[in-house]
Image (cartoon, rainbow, N blue to C red; front, top):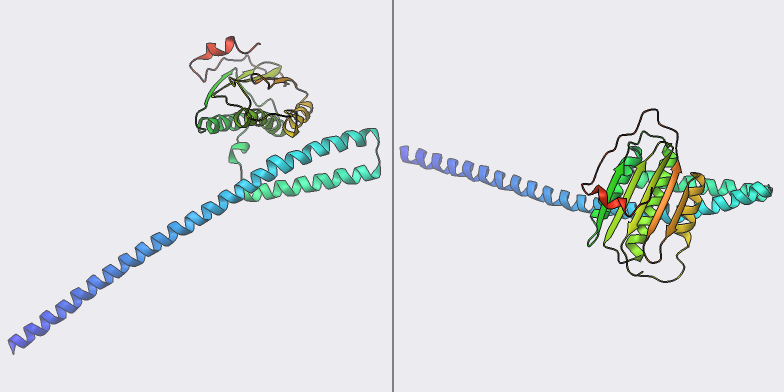
Length: 264
């Protein structure tokens, strides 16, 4: 009788241990499967988000830029000849631009843009540094005290992006030099590269350069742009006078590099 009880006790214990082990294994399996499913779902979501960001960027940078230039052309013509059809074209163009902006906000929230000109500029420099086989040398002199409105800041950033895009896409440059001078009445920006040949031949004064000219006009800025032998871009944007004297801030150790390349 005691042996029977012992056997039943051992059997119950084995069943209980087996159940505990089975439960633990099943929980581990469920957690592992959940983790794998979560990783797959996250990867799919990231891929979709990346695709949407790319689409948003294409809409903003290509179609949006084309609409912007078209808007400027229609507006200039409407100023000279205020025909009702041109007025309707302006309103339609504005509506389409607003729809594209709404799509971009939905698929690509640019937190950097909300932080202002300096943050956007630093973000551009970081993206250049991420490119293979190219180095960005950046320096800033003076202090930026938000002399430009948010719309003006974005216009100036788009100009800089277009120039740098041309350097990266159409040349064999391996060094980009960017200098920013925050002066009392102007912001001066100098962009240079060391390219020896262009990857693409043909018209270099296309949509991108027309957008630079249009935005520079809106900023009341003067600029020069030589893209043939070496990229030499200089722009001077008028700003409100600062109340306090400027202080020189050095972001790059080798600041003397720009004394010979950028004329002030």
